[in-house]
Image (cartoon, rainbow, N blue to C red; front, side):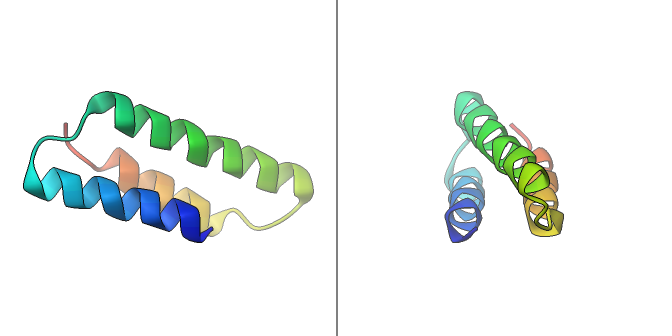
Length: 61
């Protein structure tokens, strides 16, 4: 989970400094979505991952 937090924080830092690469945002969205799917299959909570995905979706390109 820490890995995904780090990815989102890095995106926000990049957005503050300069414009974020849209491909990078899509890559992070895909990775978090895959983690959500894996968590659902394993029967583990997805709340934290869902919140991170919403954060990524709020980043303006």
